Length: 225
Image (cartoon, rainbow, N blue to C red; front, side):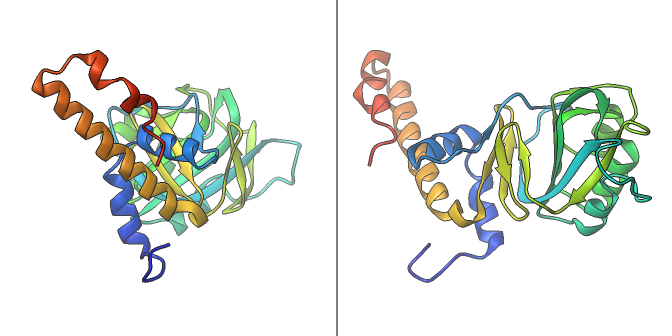
């Protein structure tokens, strides 16, 4: 928290967009926080997204009461610019947890992107819409008759990482990280410090210094201080 009090969410998102997942992961490590969601990649091209989490929790049919509302629709309707829809799909890769009609709605509402712990379908449609989707893989198999929404905008778990509504999500070519809303300012401060140190090291590389000197004690002590 700054001396003037907590920053507005828009300012925090701007700072988050200015760093990458590697720097944020390093910051989380330094502060003893979990947050790196492993095994997910952007299936719609090369994108970087940053936003606040709107969550969806999916379960297999039979494990909860069947809802007349299609999975993900309430989250899409409630989301807009600055939001990332996070779907806890339990790592399932034999059926989709997100599809093309949902992607059209998310794109219409200006959603930053979608993160799914499992498979998605209609990948080409999402790509054509310009909607970044991070997932395990793409499959053609529908969710109909297989999985349903247990709840939305609740605490979920993504590959061992807890995600709460309003948490900060950053995703890029290296993967996905989640920053608890209550910890975002110290994490950003540490990530920005990491970026500054790495930029100084790259400057030394461009000056022609030997790599053994550039990546000596400075690199090993990068997270200290």
